[in-house]
Image (cartoon, rainbow, N blue to C red; front, side, top):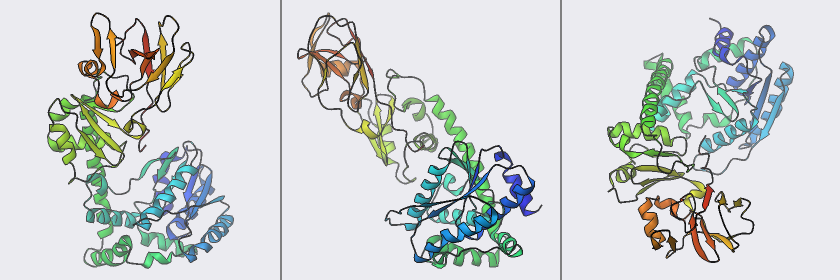
Length: 434
């Protein structure tokens, strides 16, 4: 099958997209991809095509690349968008540049648009070896997916089944010009070392090394799909509603997870927590084991990159962002007929309030007491303990005061000194990685 026929086959699922954008560096791979797409567009009904060039400006040679890309795009009749980005100083400039590049791509994509990138089979082999040497798990060894969500659209890599030699041959036959990044020859960079030193040595002994290594990523991707399906079943089994289901926080029941093998527990948690945070490697899960095995009256937590996993009784709660901070301050409620916006803590509403009084919403400071019908004057801390209120929630629960007296606790009708209802709509959880 010809190169353009294989490309068209790889893109068949995306032909109804409103637009295709090509990540165009001006290098060999993206130049071939853009040229192929223009040729295909002359005989096939394809989405409108546009190129996007991200200019990092990390080296002097790069200053000429936007002009080169513009000239080629004009020759091919393809609109070009050039986006200049700043790359944050980091221990790995490769990674920082990649992050800046994909952030720009994500921001450029419209609803359901597709970004086409030109990574090929040799790139896939390098990625697997690179991650293998870093001790990656199954997900990491699946290397680059053929497609994934990006911004408001999708990222698609249609050349993963094609080797660099074939792309070079196409470029020569069609007389294409491309830019060469001088940094690609610097073997101080890990990927360049693999490309110029390791893979050629492997090929001398195993001529099909890149092809067979890339094929292993397909097996790993399939294995990861099965692990994800298993994790989905385990998370579903632990997702029964709890007593505080009105809290807009990710949470799970612990008992169904504890019944699983340790490996299966980690698989389920990686799947669940992966939406919210980067995860520790396989050697740093002692925090989970300590949280899991703590006594039932303990309130342990496991700090991870983007937040904390809390255990309260038989429930796990994921907290991040403002939920890691206590709510503070006193808010005067001038018009109880209207809902009250609490700074950083959602809104409250009151119903059934009789009489006139100075109303305030406060938060726990310690030592609070309130009159509870048929029980008399009670310490708030004990009342919250009796109700099993999660410890992390207690500092954020709105408390309603009338003329300096505590009269109600939000969302807990049984904790009220009067026949009224104090409803609280807590702030939503952070969106997390997705």
